[in-house]
Image (cartoon, rainbow, N blue to C red; front, side, top):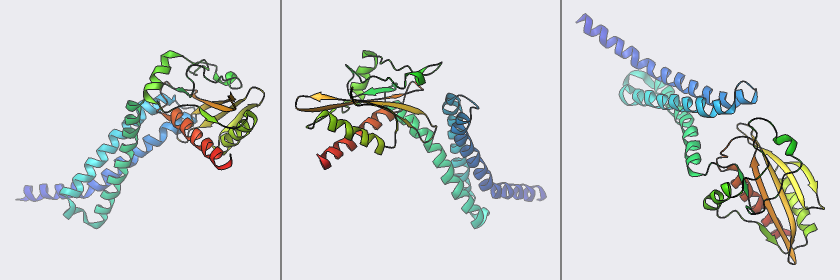
Length: 261
C-alpha cells in the first residue's frame, strides 16, 4: 500500500512539473531560432550553420514543447491547477510558433527553384557595375548572369516577372524609377541617367542578407521600357525573395505612373 501511494505521489509530482518542462523546452527552441541570425551577424558562424543546423533543432524542440504541453493539458489538467494550465498553454503556443518558422521556410524552399538571380529580361539582363567590387571573394555570388541555366527555371517558376512599358519619355521614366526605388527603402548605390542605370541594395530583416538590384530604363517606341534585376550576394536559393522584390517594385512603379502619368 505504501509503495502504491509513493508511486502515485511521484506521478502527480511529475505531472505538476510537465508545464514547466514544456515551457523550458519552448524557450530553448526560441533561443536556438534566434541564435542563428544573431551568431551570423556577429561572425560566430556561417549562415548555413544557422539555417541548416540551428533552425532544424529549433523545430525539433518546438515540436517537443508541443507534445509535452499537450500531454500536460490533456492528461494532467486536474493535477496542474490553473497556474500549470496557463504555463502549458503558453508553452504550447510558443512551441508551435517556433516550430512553424522552420516549417514555413522549408515549404517555401521546396516551392521555388534553387536560384538567386531574377530579372525581367533573362535574354539581356540589366548589368551590375557599381556593386562589382562588393561581389568578390569566396562564397559570394558573382554578378555574371548564368544565362539559360537559370532563365528556364525562372520562366517556369515566375512567368509573371516581366518588364514595365510606359508611355512617357525615358528621362521621366528614369526619375520615377529612381524615386520609387528610394520609396522602397533601398540603399541607392549608383545613378547613371546617361545609360539609364540605377543600382541599389536591400537587406533582409532576419539574417541581414544583402541583395543587389539594378534597374535599366530605355526607350521603347514612343515610350520607355523598365527592366529590373535582383540578385542575392550569398546563398544558392533565395527562397523567392528576389522575385517578390521585383514584383513589389514593378507594382509600386506601375501605381506611380498610374497616379502621376
